[in-house]
Image (cartoon, rainbow, N blue to C red; front, side, top):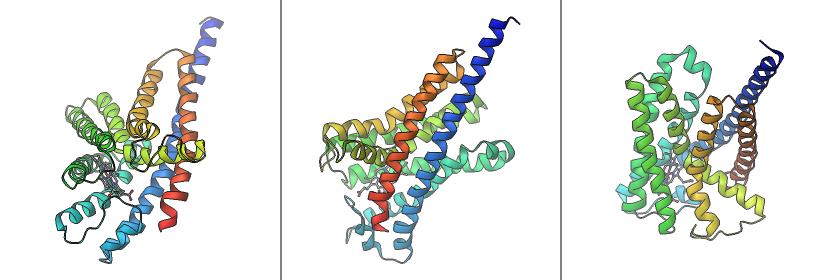
Length: 273
Ligand code: HEM
């Protein structure tokens, strides 16, 4: 091996390490932020549902939570918000490498549960949106519905790849499914990051139909999926610069995620606990 080859190899391995570390940094921040989301759901909806005080769901700002006389709508809302804890926690658990490697049976069972719950979440979300008519504007209903359809599509492809034992495709589609399942969490984080960065939320309005609202609602799942694709490409690439630039992009996303997650806890969840 010539000195030039050795130099190139060292560069590639530094790029690989940087890329891996950027992903670990993002995952650590996302885990903390999603744990806070789970905590909010359990502390607010879980506690109030268990004590039978369904009217208290509405103590937190909602479009349509508990509605007297709407048994089916209330039941669907309860199923949707309570299962949100399982889909969020389950998704995180699936991405922890030691669990995948040391407890494959657990990985398979949590995986199946995650897929089934994600399907129920998407279908119940679509029902709440279009049958119960829970939306602030048509464009916001459309944005979250496309997320619901992507969840159904990505889960189906990831599951089929696992059944075919095509583990490379399974891994990639399962992580894409993780991103779109977390679209609703990214939306809360994105909205709060934008409010904090712009000092009040330029381009936003009360019906989530301002220009910034629209970008954030579609971006809540399209941006994470796009960054993930860049990450997959950088992983497969031999170019050190591609790995470094992608690592920098992931680190910028990590900073935005951190800011938005802190904002969501401070302004969206903590005041209503
Ligand atoms: C799969 C991941 C999802 C999770 C973890 C999730 C989580 C939640 C949570 C926690 C709430 C309660 C509102 C809050 O306190 O913030 C909620 C409400 C709701 N979700 Fe989802 N959701 C998911 C997917 C979807 C999808 C795909 C749709 C639409 C297609 C949807 C439509 C709704 C609607 C309409 C409400 C009621 C909102 C309101 O009344 O203010 N969700 N969801």
